[in-house]
Image (spheres, rainbow, N blue to C red):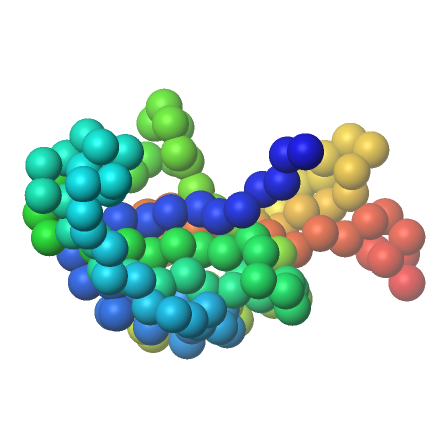
Length: 155
């Protein structure tokens, strides 16, 4: 059996980033909060004296405990380069929303930033997508998307 479980974001202030996702996307905390350390973590993460604090957030649209957005903070985080939409590796997290502009405005109100312009195009055999890329307060890229099929447009 294989089942998707979570996406992890490492931050310098897990409470602040978790609050952002709860306020903008209505994510719900899944307790208990985590405060993890020990030889088992050092070995698994290959980090000497690793210590993690954080929480899992239930993603919108999921009533059960999975999948979650895991927001963790190490005592010492390594710096990285600014996230770009075309950089190798993890690119973005996407949310289907009723109104792209409204949620983009919530992101901006809560300290996030806009990456590009809101765009609309037809994807053959899939429908019409309206989407935009934005960044959370740590610079991680978020895609906001709304899909309409041709039948919905004609109404």
